[in-house]
Amino acid sequence: MIDYSNDISSSNAILIDAWGQAYQAIRLLNIIVEHSDEVDGFDTKPYLSTSKILRALIYLDMMQHWGDVPFITKELSMDNRVSRTNKDEVMNALLKDINESIPYLYEDPVHNQTIVSQDLANALVGLIHLEQKDYNGAASYFSKIIDETYTISFENSIYSDINNKEAVFTLLFPEDGNYQPSQIFCQFLKKGTLHPIYRNTSILFHYAETLNGLNRNLELLNVLNQIRVAGSMNPLQELPSNPKYEIADLWKQFIGQDYGYFALLKRLGIAVELLEIQSYQQLYPIPYQEFSLNPNMTQNPSY
Image (cartoon, rainbow, N blue to C red; front, side, top):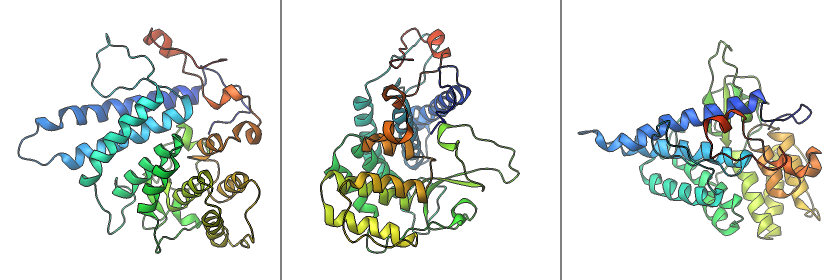
């Protein structure tokens, strides 16, 4: 989440860098996806599936920040300029990609948080359904991850211990500290060589969102109390009249304002209020250089 105390415009360096890095990664992933069937004598399905999941993760992150974005799934020449694609169309395409990929992904019996696993794929599908307000669909996928043995942890070791059990998918940064990530979701990076993108606690929060959307209040109270007790807080005796504020407050307290917080507030409909921003600022401006590179590009309203 970007700092709105600064002037946010299409020339903002963080936004320019985030947009550029996202499409650079997408371009490389597209090459793998497009040419994976050209390799003989080698099972490329796990690599193809991993590439599709990572591409879906990036596109979902971009849509959460910019709304509609150009949806590019093939190598493009400089002569091909893609206009922004309706995010519902993109999300449906991502759901298809992910669901087709899940059978070929690592089931992660020994828990390796740096590898794309089935849990990450299920979390992504659940989150896309949540973005679409398909709460039943979201619940079905989050339930595949959350079971009786599901545990959460708020220990700082998640940022330094590669063997921690809390992280589902993590970015790994060099120990020398020379790499300073400037992507939007890394602006509030906590100290450590690990930066969890998906973690058990965030998935449990997403499940709480889902239960709130379905008005399954008793289950929601149980989930919120599971989070509170893990954080050494007293359990609630009854559900607050407006549980979305409790969800947001607990997220900020135990996860912080890094990856996922901005999107959470927007889904709950309280981003404008809690962040003290204007409604149009719920979408970031498209970087200015895109308009000279792509004549089909359009800007978000009020920028």
